Picture 1 (cartoon, rainbow, N blue to C red):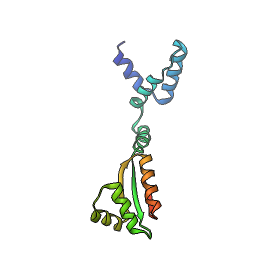
Picture 2: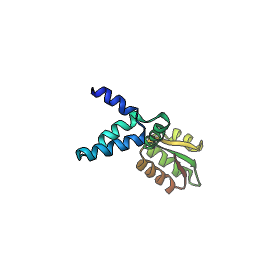
Picture 3: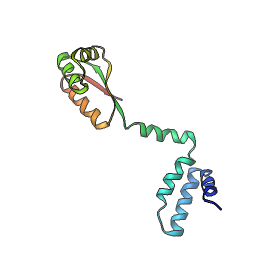
Picture 4: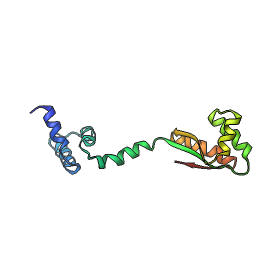
Length: 128
């Protein structure tokens, strides 16, 4: 039996069968088959099962959206300029056209920092 034919057979297994296979491999040889299970599981997953995993991976990037300017419009414009390196006119247009994304595709930590800076000057922010 070739390696390719073994892989082809593993791809036909459902998740429960893969779990049983890894348990038996671990018992028989006393080794952890976690890397094998991780590599084989995506190949064996049905498209419906793969979709939630893709959604979890996408959540590494967030959009920071300015929902409402608040009472301190000038301070919000200054913070937006600082965060985006936009000119005064562009930052003012962005703030006046709220709700509008301030930054897109940033990490969760960076999104929280941006939101905190905008909230300090009275703006309302949504992270998506």
